[in-house]
Length: 136
Image 1 (cartoon, rainbow, N blue to C red):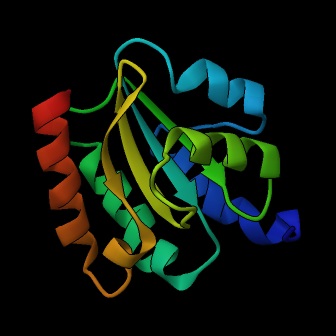
Image 2 (cartoon, helix red, strand yellow):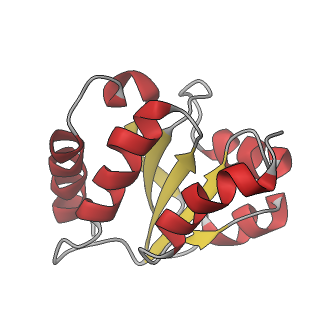
């Protein structure tokens, strides 16, 4: 686990954009399988989260069509919540950062770390917007 003072600004970046932090497996179990659309960001301290994933997520949720719920878990911090979220993301392997879109509890779109690294935030945001336009 990382010191909270280190991750606090990284958490806040998504919270300020309207994301709800999920810190327990119970919170994940309440949020993801719910009716409607849920966008989950697996946040991380890595550079590609700062430069690509968080900016892409923040830009994409400004789209006219966007998920009903915006939630986030933080890799390396609340292990139970992250592991529970990753169970919903199967068959994709654990990845952080990562982004997943669920519709009525079913995974409909996934962006893994290898789809984030080395790609501009706007390209990732465009990918998310396309998924939001299709499923939301």
